[in-house]
Length: 251
Ligand SMILES: NC(=O)c1ccc[n+]([C@@H]2O[C@H](COP(=O)([O-])OP(=O)(O)OC[C@H]3O[C@@H](n4cnc5c(N)ncnc54)[C@H](O)[C@@H]3O)[C@@H](O)[C@H]2O)c1
Image (cartoon, rainbow, N blue to C red; front, side, top):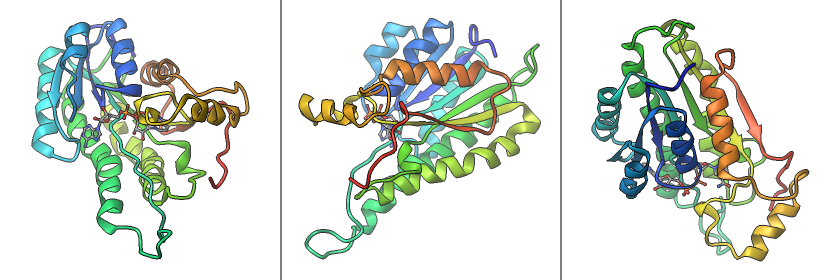
């Protein structure tokens, strides 16, 4: 799928993996809409794109981003990067149970929010002209290796990311008739602001747990994978780990 001349939405595009993907999409000639709850104006300006402040869980806010993208060109790409991952144990150390609202919030943003963006973007994509190569668009979601080897404290996060892996095939099947492909990336430990709180030594120690190469993944490596999945017309219905071969231990 050709990106030049089309528009793209990157949720969570103001930071980390989403920001790197927004840059790569713009470099490939796409008009990029950055959808985020935090400010993405400066990056959007730099990329000649647009920033829409929106929460992935709120339908009318996401719809504004979809409409904005459609005005900039046929919407062909959606990359879902918005996500949160606050840890909490099922049974806290003090014997109290996991806060239920905290669990529900992670599911709402990571899983329901991803689906909300998919369903609204799919309407706009389905109304674009079919490409000469066939198909109309492509979607990339972001799960995590925590979908497969979630650690202590990751019940909510792993459930949300496992849900994304689980819905990848049925959503690809739902959207096949309108020519939209759907794939998911399950990144390992990536060097983004999500890990900003960690001291360098802790990041280095995390890096040594990676099979090969022994370091954290970079946002550019995520962006390369996302663009590969968007543009490769034969990639569909798949979730791929992009993790240097790491298998996470319980903690
Ligand atoms: N960094 C890692 O090690 C890692 C590993 C595996 C998966 N992931 C996943 O990759 C994605 C991107 O993470 P990142 O590391 O770039 O983190 P990040 O914190 O740098 O970026 C996440 C972005 O999502 C935005 N966001 C949060 N809630 C939102 C909402 N309700 N609506 C809209 N935007 C919202 C944030 O404002 C932020 O800009 C997340 O889904 C995360 O779970 C990250």
